[in-house]
Image (cartoon, rainbow, N blue to C red):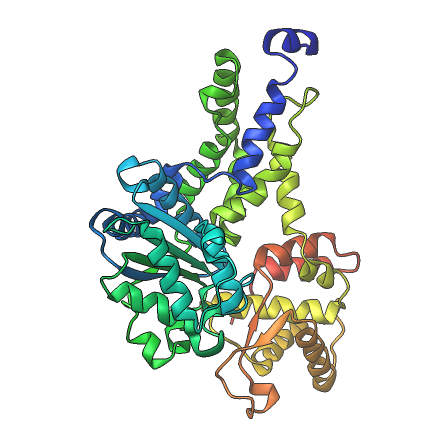
Length: 435
């Protein structure tokens, strides 16, 4: 469509609104659509909604830990639940929310000041001096009653929960969990952490007051759901602008997601990182390119974004290693695939290398074993290969269990662009040698 017609039909600011709306989604300022979260975390979401609702409506004290690896959607899950809770007047009118972060509230003094600020009790506290943390917290909770017999429920959300366990005597955690179990004030505590063993960090008195409710979050998004999430994240709501423009934009996104190039890009991204966070990073560059001169997202935008994200240090290192070291990496690749990801050792890699050299002696130089071992150790130093934990450091280095840190796709890309790589080596990478 010509630029002049587009400006007159939809106005100059329409595409700016589009970019602003989509950037709020992928930059995590705005919570992703509920359907995206429920696709992967429906049970966990319902568990949290029930726990917080019972605290707000029935006054039940409770505590829970949301655990999972980095980027699995823990904070997104909690934020989505809180958004739903706040939209329900029956629940939100009885609930106050306090958010703390272990990276920011590094000791109990800073934490109690932040609690006071978020509960808007600065004027009530004034210059009062308290003998202990428990006394200070009890005063705040009592002040919230404001002359009524019943106290408002309070939800404490503790991000980086494991860092609070390093506070002196774990006073904050002890008092919060203690109040959860008592009937004096209805509060709920939801901790967010990456550490699965976080309960082992708690003191005995703190652990005994924790309810031991664990909500586990993992990156288990299937590829069809991942692709659907991509389309939902790029789809515009009707409120963005002209209905005709929104309809046409959404049709272009539907066409985009059915494109074979986009399918391949999303498939590769899903293999590397199944999380919504990873998808948001992939979509950021294409969204930022939307302008009057580039009014729609094209497959090439996603392809370039994928290349930017995939351009890692290991691929750059592989471009700088010798043909001998490339041969060893190819041998490791075949061993990893043959043994379904099980560890290998230098002797196994050396045997693979010998088999290849014996068949292609006219092309590849055969090196002595000490030279090959030195090349192998250099790969370990570059962290292209690493020792497997728990297999004993006392084992002779030739027999130490190792694992490859390079994906087959990365290796093939490097071989296709490596300046000194023989064609026989590329052929070996794609076709393992017969036993």
